[in-house]
Length: 133
Image (cartoon, rainbow, N blue to C red; front, side, top):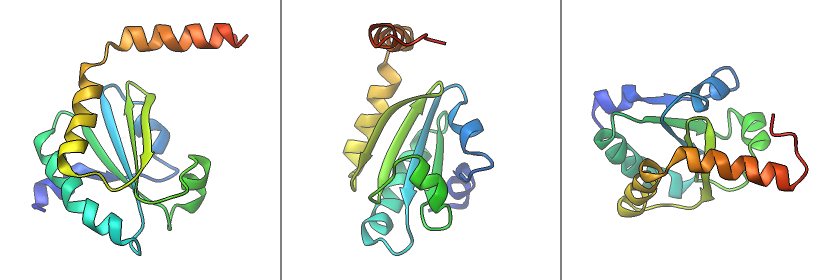
């Protein structure tokens, strides 16, 4: 991984997580652990995709050193990939994704009509009796 990509992949922690994932645009979170073989295999794939998508934010969450944050996010298995767009969690799945699958996940997020997503969320809240606020 070249230095430029390393500097673009930001570590998240309890101090910067909410601000980071609430930002406009697409934010990916790679939940990993140093002791995880699948995580080590996925790292270079994640870096390659990050290098091709400089318009998006790529982050890493060390689930060992930040175990409380990982637990609060419901991360049970590593690696787990999470994707936010405009502060909305759109994707969360455990697994070791290959490059093609990760590119597909990013492409699908890019293609979404976020106004329709927000409308669906509000409709679901209303149907559940939520206040929508």
